[in-house]
Picture 1 (tube, rainbow, N blue to C red):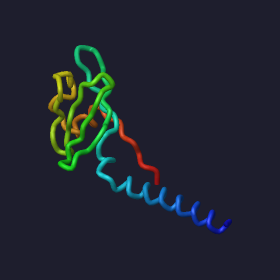
Picture 2: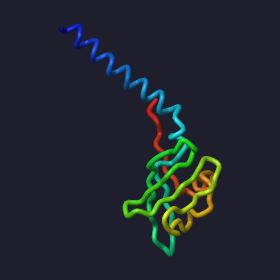
Picture 3: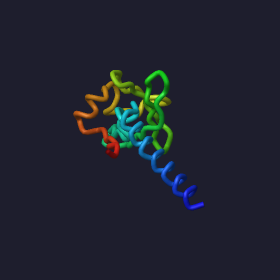
Amino acid sequence: MRTAFAVTAMTQFSEIFTAEANAAESPLVDFPYLVICELNGVQRAFYFTKLGPDGVAVYIAPDGPAGTITIAGKAAAVGGEWSGSCSGKTLATLRASGQTFYVQPQK
């Protein structure tokens, strides 16, 4: 019984380490988890929610407005025109202007 418990425990840890390695290789780490945009002096936070098979990342805000962006493309509003200071910018431009925040994978 102790051996079975030890094997089960070790298997769970190996899955965690594999998941971390896969997360570091995932295209998700190329996208910021948070983008800050400003319009008329009001700042809004947009949160990364999903990456589609077509490479389009979708961002949401708690009250609904969303935006999309690809690795090389420009930010576009979805469901409204609120994107403000993010509109038409690439990820590189948003990063350079300090509007992005990234999750750093554990090593």
